[in-house]
Amino acid sequence: MDLDVFVATHQTEWHRLEVLSSRRRLDGEEADELVTLYQRATSHLAQVQAAAPDPTLEGRLTTLVARARSAVTGSRQASWRDVGRYYAVSFPAALYRSRRWWIPIAVLSILGSALIAWWLVAHPEARTTLATPDQLRELTRPGGQYETYYTDRPASSFAAQVWTNNAWVAAECLVFGVFLGLPVLWVLLTNVLNLGVGIGLMAAAGRLDLFLGLLLPHGLLELTAVFVAAGLGLRLGWTVVAPGPRLRRTAIAEEGRATIGMAIGLATVLFVSGILEAFVTPSGLPTWARISIGVVAELLFLLYALVLGRRAAATGASGDVAESDRAELAPVAA
Image 1 (cartoon, rainbow, N blue to C red):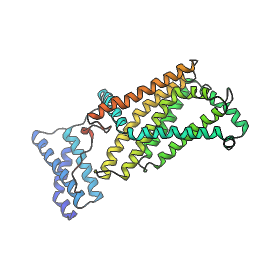
Image 2 (cartoon, rainbow, N blue to C red):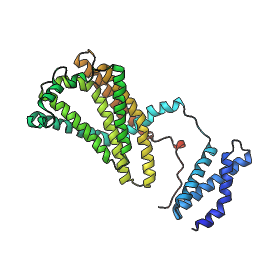
Image 3 (cartoon, rainbow, N blue to C red):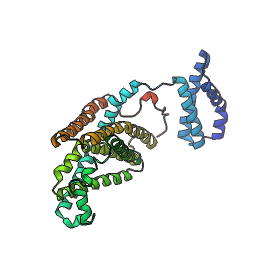
Image 4 (cartoon, rainbow, N blue to C red):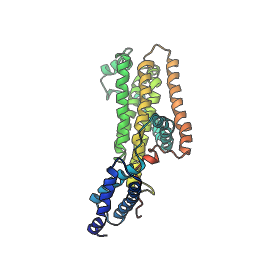
């Protein structure tokens, strides 16, 4: 294909389409012309992509087609119905579809933390490599840093701080997935080490029951959200490596939209976890009551992800934006 000849041949049509797309009102004849020119421009874009890829021309035609599509279909305002559909369909469907990633990650991470904790308990010399004996006593003693961490700040500001920190960790996992998922592994390793060291040091000090009583009320839901974010990030990274039958750019776009869209849902989950951490964990409730609240919150999330998510996924939902809101994909040569 000679691009210069192709552009010269269709330049007038494209200009006319641009003019019609920018008008607020069209009569019947102009509306029919807009639809016809839009269909032709879509075909032209497909021809360029298949026969003579040119970034400049592709960008121009893609912008023109997108603008014309908006003019043809009309704009749509977001509504509360979209919010309801997100939490009732899109988010649980994405959780369910990614379960083969985040559930194994959760199991392996917990086992890794348990192994680190066991090593620290069984090998006193390993504990001394982490801190001096005085520092270790300050961490684990009654009223020490592990215990006062949850009570030395006002609950409301502590909840905001915890939510911001955890939401940032989850966002890192989601965004870093595009880098083949490698940075996600580092985030996971950091969490596994921190959890394993905390359990190991408190167990060695004979205060594991207190530590679990402080960790489990909020930690079950919090860690699950981080595992989900890591699973989604790794799945996105794997899509870059193995896109399957889709074009790589199409696969990355679809999975990337679904992954980034999960950030809102995970932020909500972490908000609940932050509330538990600020108001339930340091409360005067008996340990069994605090742990029970954490277990109930975790079970509700799992039911939401695996039961409601399965039903939503069965309808074809994937966590991606609605089909009517996606950019139109033109056919290309294999």
